[in-house]
Structures are given as C-alpha cells and as structure tokens.
Amino acid sequence: MKKLISIIVVVVLIMGLAACSNGSEEPAQQSGLTIYTSFYPMQFLAATIAGDKAQVISLVPAGVEPHDWEPKPKTLAGLQESDMLVYNGAGMEAWLEDFLPSLQKAGVKTVNTSTGLELLPFDEKNEEEDHEGEELIYDPHVWVSPAKYKQQAQNVLNALIEIDAANQAYYKSNFNKLTEDLDKLDSDYRQAIAGFKTKVFIVSHSAFEYLAKDYGLTQLPIRGVTPQAEPSPAKLAELVQICRENDIKYIFFESLVSPKLSETLANEVGAETLVLNDGQGITEDQMKQGRTYITIMYENLENLKKALSNNG
Image (cartoon, rainbow, N blue to C red; front, side, top):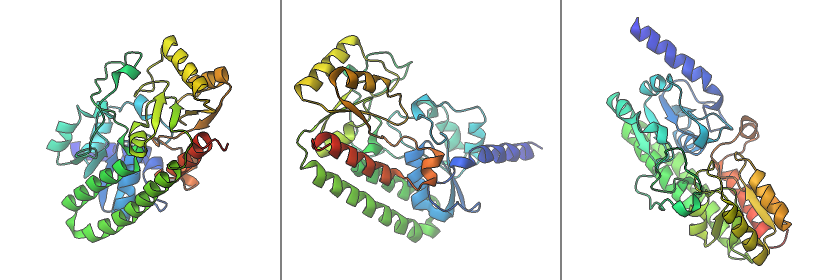
C-alpha cells in the first residue's frame, strides 16, 4: 500500500511539472532515466546532453525567478524516485542542502555542476540589505559565462556516463554538439566586445560578473548578487554620477526582475533601458518559440553591442 501511495505521489508531481519537463524541441520519452534539474540553465544542459534517453524535469517552473522559489513538501518524494538531480551549486539553491543527504541515501546521483570551477567570492559591498539569512560565500551565477557553462556541461556528461555507460557514445555526441555551439558563442562575444567603445555596463542586479570577467567588461549592479537586496540612496546617487561621467545611454534589467529601479535610474540620467537576460528562467511561450540558453545569450550580445558600441 505504501509503495502504491509513493508511486501516486511521484506521478502527480511529474504531471504537475510536465509543462517544464524538457529543454529540447522534441518531448522526452517516458522510458529511460528520470532527471530532475533545479532551474532552467540546468534543465537545458541535462535535456540537451541526455536527449531522448531521459525525461528531464525542472523543479523551478518556467518563468519563475529561482531566487524566490521554495520547494513544496512533496518535492522530496519525486526526487527520491529519480535517477539524477542536476543543480548549479555555489549557494544558488540554498533550499537544497537539507535534501541532499536523503537523496544520496536513496541512490540518486546528485550533480553539483559548479564543482571544479573557479568561483568568484561573494561581494558583500554590493549587498545593501540583508538577504533573509542566506549565507553566500561565492557568486553563484556561473552559467552566465559561456566558458563556465561549458565546464558545467562537462560535469553533467561525466555524471550521465557514470550512471548509464551503455549510452555514453550518444551522450558524448550531444555534448560535442553543445560545446561547438558554446565555443562559437564565446568566439562571437570576444570578437564583438573587442570593438566596444566602452566596457562599463549597469544592470539591475549583480548576475553578470563571470561574463564581465571573461570578456574584460565592468559590471556595475544596482542591486547585489541577490535581486531582493535594495540599494541605499547613496548607492543610487553614486550610480547617477557614474552614468553622467561615462555618458551611459542604456541601463539594463533582467526579464524576471522588476525593471523599476533600472527605469528610475534611466529617467534620472536621460538614458533608455534594455534587457540583459541572465537566463535563470524562460517562459513557456519563449520555449515554444524555440528560444534557448544559446539564443538568449545572442540576444544579450546584440543588446550589449547597442549599449556599448554607441551605435544605438
């Protein structure tokens, strides 16, 4: 009877999350592996590399800001019945720490995709307000860098081969195609940024430091690493001065974060606003349109060109 109830709970959870279950264009087959992922960038990696060998389920629904998401009690039941959990790590999924021992005891392969990456320390000077007990050591937004994302993909591939060696050639083929796309993305960024007239950009929250470090840019965030942190009046006054001194024409905001502060700053200095998407989540409609991590990063590049080449 308990086994039957457990099965029912798992089925209900999977049905409830089915809308965000696959990051590829074709629906995942119901046979094979069951892989849970924490939020969209992890979903995209797992779905792209595992292909039709797995059903891939994102815990954070499409269009929901991951920083604000909290798991429901039934979440653990579904996770315990899965083959693998893929998550970002580096403190991004603070809610997950309590789950990991139980999942590992249940035989679930847990994949911290930031393992082995050179992580940037959490910059407390950008955090103007307490972030509700979160104890960040590192900046968790590693996936925003194509080079770091490639390393995360490698960790996913290694884990898939470990639990399903029979399909390793298939996984490696999918991985190679993905890394070709990421290498081209990296090359296109480097080529474009080399011609920028200014390397300073202002964004609503500090999600782009890995990208900035990789390409010689300077990120100036209105908020800190956590989008809930509110800037002080002194911080806003400092940014107003920077905008005027550097003739900043565009202020960026992310698609899942309120644009209010970016709009306020832009109005103050006579600038416009543009989207710079950190890729944390895309909507169902965007998925149906074929938008992915790769297309989002190219959209970001076009907006960076507009803002920093002074051609807009």
